[in-house]
Length: 389
Image (cartoon, rainbow, N blue to C red; front, top):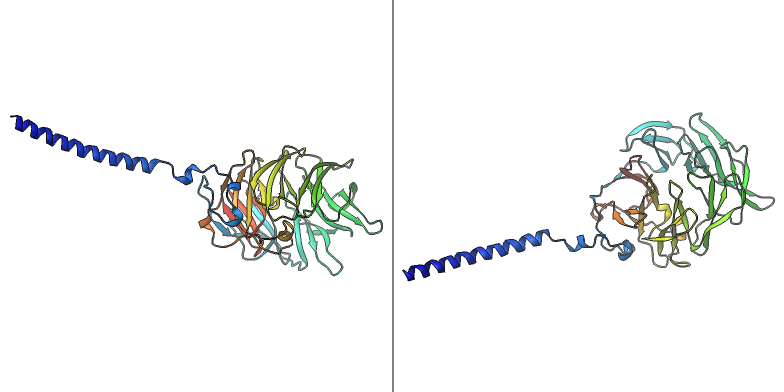
């Protein structure tokens, strides 16, 4: 009897041991499958901790990025999204104007008359007019073309830079008086009438942008890595100009749609190649570094002014002076694409590294009305591309 009991005890112990071993194996496997990976645990890593310019591994992103698709088979100038039709307008390099839908299908040939000397265009906010730049033997000339009336109005000589006011009712332009040698910032109706000087300019190359949802106009010396950039503001009706933000080399700016913030791109030190992107408030204060190595001209704001979508340039040659060498087209960059939450600085890729089949140097970025797509022109081939968001 005792022998049988001992045998039963031994068999029971063996069975219990086997079950215990299997349970431990199962428990270990389960914990291994569900525990965070190294990459998951570093999801809050900022881009400043990752050397994007040297092509390091990507920081994790929170959603599956879309692929990059080409939309045009010809080079384009000044593509723009029409919110009223959800279509895209662009000039071809020969001056013809085409309208396509967001997938690239041609909807309408707006103008099939060639303008062989066109070198640039800037659309009005409602995309019915454009300030066009035409080259000639005696220098570039600017015209305002109305696509509704199919009429063109030349702007007077001495105007070498012009853009639309925020509501499109007027144009802002830089004028050089060849007799007095004075430069000024002016405002007028699109046909050049009722013009008024609003500020004197002390530099030859200037960038101008009206602050959205305001009557203020901001202007600054064109970004140069050897010079500090000074942004000033003045009322669109004139008055005293005031300095808003200074002390950064090679700086450029991009105002948010609500006019309460502006991106500031600059370089780390005079004559440097290292880029830095930050943000300021409408008064030029509360500067915050976003830890993003890019140019303001390679970004676009979301309509709610919460996010910016940016192309981060890489392949910047060692010893370059930024942004000079890039703006003068001494090299093409190889960009990666990111979404940045401006308030927190949190970044996520919108295109995974394994989605790239070619190199892209993105300029003229814009979003669809629903912000489900990002569009850009590739400076390398001048074709228009789309990224699904």
